[in-house]
Image (tube, rainbow, N blue to C red; front, side, top):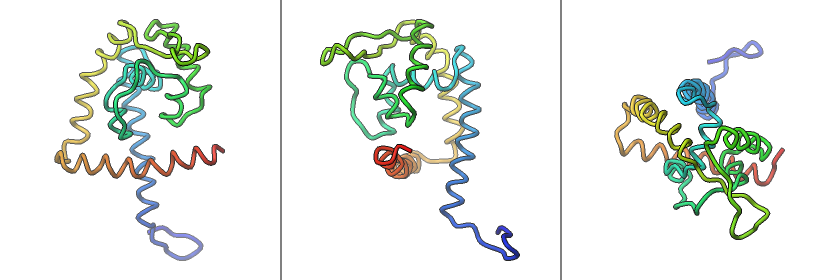
Length: 170
């Protein structure tokens, strides 16, 4: 219960869920920074590198099939829910580090598709065992069926946020 205006109010379940999401996001962000640092990356660089590498967990989280050869920066921005400018800066950093390369899009020569380099694969392989162990510990209390259900609930929760961003980008 919270105290507001001289009376006690009960927090709604919905409000408590949102607070839990923020708390989880904060904890995951700190853990992500520590993991990414193992490969000399930031969390955001690591996430973009995983997207470029075609990490299957991203497609499963979004409920989509296999991606085509390479990925467009605009596709990363849309998937991550961030601006194209943010992704452009991250892509420039990863290109400079030699972790990704860009190639002409065969459908539109003005666009550039991103591909991972061997150096990028080595960076990801540095983090992967740490990532798997952290995920195992994080989800240890949930049986596999509950994990699948949780993923479904998270996808259902994310869908209206993605739709709202498409309709109202402010």
